[in-house]
Image 1 (tube, rainbow, N blue to C red):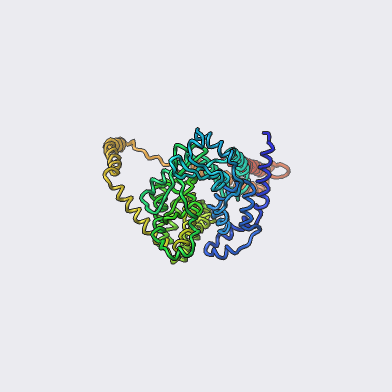
Image 2: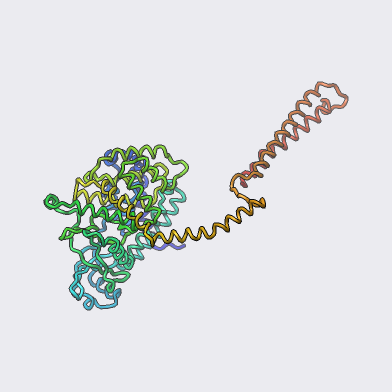
Length: 556
């Protein structure tokens, strides 16, 4: 396989980064310190070879793929301390904007018409510029203000090349490093590839905006900008423009003047509905992706990254949230273990006890303490170090709640997030139960019962017929009895043979005392014959035990 210069450069960048951080205290000590999950303040004061800001800058210098990888690592509390998770969660790329000439060309190629024909105005200066694309403000011919997101040219090829390089090195690391295998570096890369390919598909993001808008249309304080499909394509996304400010940048005076508790309560309810009920979640709700509008509403933007939860995970997460909000440590541990993959050497006793302690310690926290998201981060870290692999959805939920903590702490510092989770989760659960009891939903269960009853008599007849004719059989995949009895037979035979050899040696020694005319080497001949036979038998038995049994074990 030939290696191109670009490949060599990518290898050089990655290997240089790994040489700097692999043996660093940051990665070497974080696992052992993560075990002290009950004292986050102590952990946050630890110093490492590299600061959070230095890690962020190194990832920025390596390029857009590594920036996205850093954002993904912010959901892995088993790998990094809290200060680094926080720094990575806000990691944004600072790249030069695409020239307007390039923007002009891409837009016209993608939407198939001239900019002057599609838009009444189109600002040349971008509102924002990132590694994947940049956003320009424009107006449609009707006068409606819109935001146009344009994908950076060549970015998909660059991402895929970097990802291929990372995959080769990650597979090699997992094969030869127990640490890489323990923390599933290959799974991290697989998840990164999936996320990036989704973000690069603006058709998918447009559909995500529509889906989330439909799901949240019952919330009066929430807005989801909708796409303009006629002027959107694979590399261009035109959507409604929403003017507002970063939600955490509200002035202290306005925080005092306005009661934001109803708005906060609805925001929490909306995300719980996404997670528990819809299974379709805005997975990157950091403050930069949530705007506060002039009319005191919240706009959820940037739907490039969404998470989808299957019905089983939704049920587990509902039980988990209720257990945490009820301050029930034992139930929290039970739910986490039920939804997880537990290794043979998992320390379950330590896991259950520590979870109970963590839940009790955070019982009376409020929004300003920012404990709820951090609590899930702690549980994730504890599980990883206890040999328990939690589903990735728990990491996503932890990141969502961590961002919610930041937003709520600004809007309503005394807000009781756990109480809100308990109230809304209970309401969502009761609504789901009522929905399932509706005639149209009950009908599918009735059909399944009808099929079961239709086939039941025939199956019972078959079972009773086999029983009466003594043909009923139960197949159990258990121990191979024949192999076990054969093994015991071999042991018994060898014990018997050993006893016979021992008896021959004892008999030969007794015969040595009896005078005889028949001698061998000057000793009584009969005694020598018994001794030689016993010696040969002992050698043969030793050979069988040492060599033939060893070969059989190797074959097994």
